[in-house]
Image 1: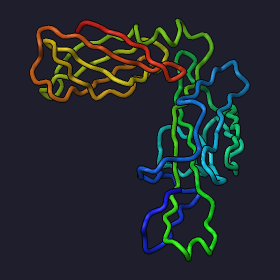
Image 2 (image 1 turned 90 degrees about the vertical axis):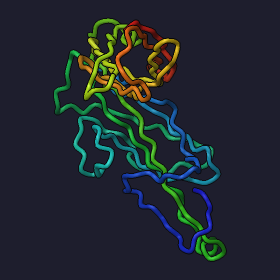
Image 3 (image 1 turned 180 degrees about the vertical axis):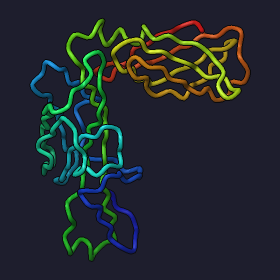
Image 4 (image 1 turned 180 degrees about the horizontal axis):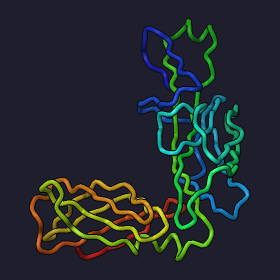
Length: 247
């Protein structure tokens, strides 16, 4: 919750599916930046901590990529429990994610879902509302969850080093083309193309297993004769995996 001068009090619903965009920070902090659910596990958990000074009501759910979908209409082979929690100030709540089956997931590659937490501040008392004009904000946190089948070759930490990079033209502009032959998703924190000692940051995000992706290179015009790429991928714990390849 943050306080601002407004003429009215606005309260966002618990079932809202979009987060407020505001420089104020959320009080609910997640214990990780991503979730890895190994097939051999019966379930996996993530911890929510209330770092604020007031109780907070949270709603937790998973989606398959459509961040605007109504949680009540999403049908996935996973459950997040409890779906709704009241977390006191300075306390925490563990959310358990369970694979429920009912849908066959690929055995030769990871599947990706997103874990969502919507935090709603407690309703202000009437006397507080009368004394001050307040704006109450709901905050939404959304992180990736990778479902990792058993028996994948190699190791997830080795996947970034097995990517295949090249420069090519697309719509008359140079793009950084990457092929991922592994069964793992590879997410990037940063990708830079080095041309004649100058670095161009590519518009990178993630490349799915056994697929290809093109990353735009703002500022680079024409196809250089020689170049290289430096990248910073993200491991299972949110740390960095650095790599380099000639183009």
